[in-house]
Length: 352
Image (cartoon, rainbow, N blue to C red; front, side, top):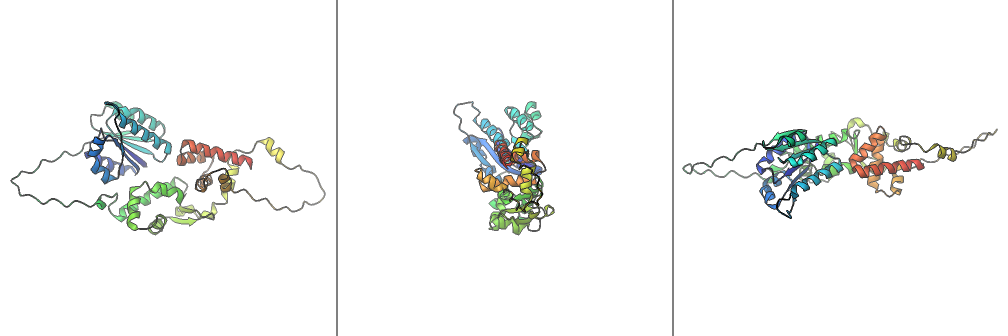
């Protein structure tokens, strides 16, 4: 499961950070790590923010008693819903004001894991798909002065705090993430789509930086035995599961999918454009078959960037039907853009 963590810094203690991220790691890959609060609240969270690479969202209270941080968290959650790249959201707060937000996310098919103290009321708990009670360890009392002073333990380096403390652990997390992306996309994904997703994965960032290699070189050298890396005729790079087969097997289907699976041109247009059949006693002269239009070129002529057009063609090529393609477009580009691109493809197909 792809996850996002949203933390209410004004409602959750920093001592709960280890519990929050440990539980998240048991559920899946964390793509987004966000914390919201005023300056005072965020200052207390500095250590966990550095340890877990959490993105801080500072809010300024314009007036006393206003819930600026709560509103910012809700906006962040709705942005995630629009982006469509997560299956679950962890909301770390005991504030029942987030109950309506949880219900909205669940209605959209996103699992909501609430995390708060045992004082969280029943409304907030039941609004979530599941609820985890945060019980951070209490601070231990200082040793008696009579005891001999012990040398302070050596502070771990920042590298020890990096997600996945060894190359093998980080690489395994990256491999599992890529596998999930491939399985959800029919076994193949263009690197132009994969790298933006990988950049949100801390394990990938840490391991790639440690290797000193460029993104594609890092993938091919680290996962050459697990995945197939190919370049299509148009120069785009692809990553595939071994069972997906060579990319050349699927390329000819691009035009067919865009023309055959989308609604046909209306009957009256078909009749008007069809040549009249006239009987003749002579054999028809051989005519060279007109070349089929390139869907990528048609989308680019409609004003789309090459990488976006390439993603759209790939989605239609790999989808079993119109509904699957429509849902995939909304998942990749968001509801509004996905719907617009789907209508654009229908219009182009109708003109052919």
